[in-house]
Length: 357
Ligand SMILES: Nc1ncnc2c1ncn2[C@@H]1O[C@H](COP(=O)(O)OP(=O)(O)OP(=O)(O)O)[C@@H](O)[C@H]1O
Ligand SMILES: O=P(O)(O)O[C@H]1[C@H](OP(=O)(O)O)[C@@H](OP(=O)(O)O)[C@@H](O)[C@@H](O)[C@@H]1OP(=O)(O)O
Ligand SMILES: [Mg+2]
Ligand SMILES: [Mg+2]
Image (cartoon, rainbow, N blue to C red; front, side, top):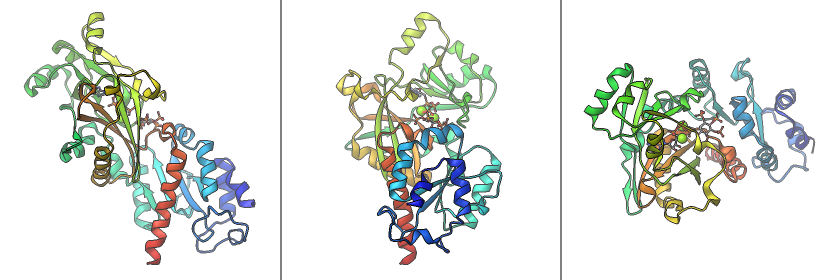
């Protein structure tokens, strides 16, 4: 019971108390072997210790009380990683979750992976880094070229402009891309700027854009987007509002040129209850998404990400992946507290089984 109380404390306290207990898997503290253990403790009475290194915004949106409650029931203990101390001096951890920026952090986590092969690090820094450049982000989807009886999945045609805005009209003409185009900052590092997108409607306005960027063909999709959340082998799909098909007409009637795209699809309000055309609202076929997610998990080498998918014209079986995000806003995913805690348990139980084999 003492452990139960301790596990519900806040982050800072958690870290201190936890290190005071000198919790160590090899030298099990007494209180884990008492017969009053929660049934949720899966590994012969040992808790699963998950270290996390997340921004304060992410910590707040992810570590909600409902997740902590489920974790407590299942014997999972979340511990904040202290970035001012060496990572190897902390823990010991069963799992490390992280989403932080910077070369220095990448090196720390890569070194830790090498020196602590017994710890599951979610996910490898190089694989995460790959998604931070929109030139490469969708490459795995394009390479996969998924097409089966349930539908086809592709990516919009796109062009990379590294510098010199005045060269854009020519580059676009040569590439054969069809306007309107969505201009996205090349680097998707999570900064506010990296989410500032714009739509360019005519050749002239193209030179007003600010490289480095990716220019992507705008695909009409009925104003609805599907967010496909992936947590290991589990996938969960939600509908979100997106840009309407007539966005070009609407904006052109006001002013020709560049239109700044609002972050409509990031709003937590889901389009699930909206009065939508049933064709537009229909979720992409489950088997198609299962196949896509499985392939991408392997090709990207990641276990925690989401895909933004749209359906061409809002009907039919032609889908486009337009964005992939590492460790997205799982707090907005219905039932994430169950999915995530089960995922963590399976990870660690799988590892123990492997070892005992
Ligand atoms: N090629 C496209 N065709 C049509 N609409 C698009 C296209 N690309 C983006 N959009 C619209 O713009 C929105 C933002 O684009 P995108 O998801 O690429 O940006 P982001 O800043 O990476 O978003 P997130 O907040 O999900 O990380 C999408 O949710 C969708 O509504
Ligand atoms: O905070 P939120 O819940 O909105 O999560 C968003 C997340 O922000 P955070 O990582 O800073 O939390 C974003 O990450 P960055 O690109 O900015 O790194 C990106 O993944 C969005 O797609 C997420 O929204 P979702 O796609 O899940 O709707
Ligand atoms: Mg997106
Ligand atoms: Mg994104």
